[in-house]
Image 1 (cartoon, rainbow, N blue to C red):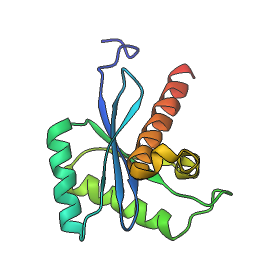
Image 2: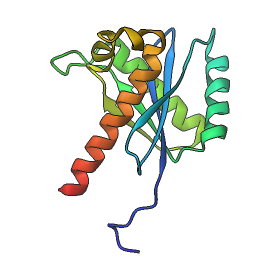
Image 3: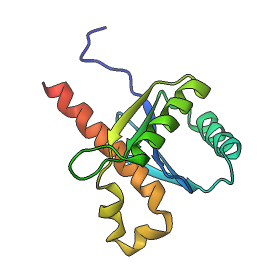
Image 4: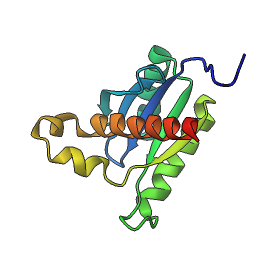
Length: 141
């Protein structure tokens, strides 16, 4: 099969936070992210159980984790935590994980009052859309 013809894939995105994790899903056909839910789990075991249920339901081919950075691109404490979270996803569920710069995803959404209720899930959808946009740019190169 020629390289230009790719099988459609489903991708699940995560906006990691220490108290909440936003989850979204998208696919390479629509190249859009859809907010699924915000998980506010009391501990890591419960968090990963909820993620496992979503993975079984949606069957993604790949996982995308937002990687928070300072505005100048420098890493900070949450960068390391989000990276660790992505590594744990990969280790537990054996799916490929990519990281996307998510410096401004929450800030953009906080300006829209309708988004505040499920802000983390909508942030995850933005992270997915950024992933698809970068994927499209690579396909053009």
